[in-house]
Image 1 (cartoon, helix red, strand yellow):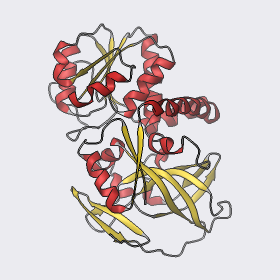
Image 2: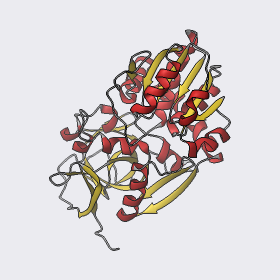
Image 3: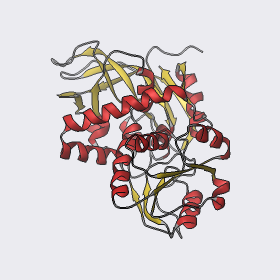
Length: 358
């Protein structure tokens, strides 16, 4: 199907089954502005979270609005400078950042040591983490894996810091839901690499149990339906990546007497919700907001030190994914709609990742 050279893919804000391809205008740049041409981006459960919570207290759709009642779903990926009216930003320079489902995106950069901050006021209701772009190198062997995983690995890495503190305080077990998610796999891989000595228990859907077990990272893998057959030693930490009330309640009820911490980090399931469900037992859930955590850690430790240790860890994890993660490709708005529909429905297999091109 033919489509315009410059387009926006918009979704109905209150019905994500409805999408449209809109011809995008190309207005002239103001002094200091830069036009980015999207090169590639990944689609994960992270993007489904942005769409589902686009009308919440953090209205992600407002970052990249569309026509009345519609919005553009945020994605993370690479873009190149196509046109620049900024004296320090050269045409052809490559960046990684938070982008709309579009062919192009206009920003108002302020150069920083690691890239630039987008000074466009419209996006400043979001944490600065979302409107800082990183200078990106030319593609290498890990580029597509980085495209897909770079926006979610900070959650895994900073959660590992939390687990390290908990292990130091005597915690011996970590229980994770959505154990097949890239954040969960990255977290457990990092915990093993750090030698934290934690017993890891992963719960996942029955269809993903064989995959999760085959990773060789978790000490115990079980489906949600087999929850009652699993026992753990305390004290334990519960990291919930589903955001789904049924499984949060079931896990908390099963292990309430062993839990010393409950951390809510993800919303991978279609029925996810932020408020704790009624009757939730065990420690009150702490919402782990990765942008704020990473920002605070980098400031306290010093950005140079923090990002150096982070980059080494991410590089190791990206390399390790070659043994289990297949990257597939698609191009054009129709293909994006199809892939995103599978992500929203939870149909995307855990051993498959999509890197898309406009």
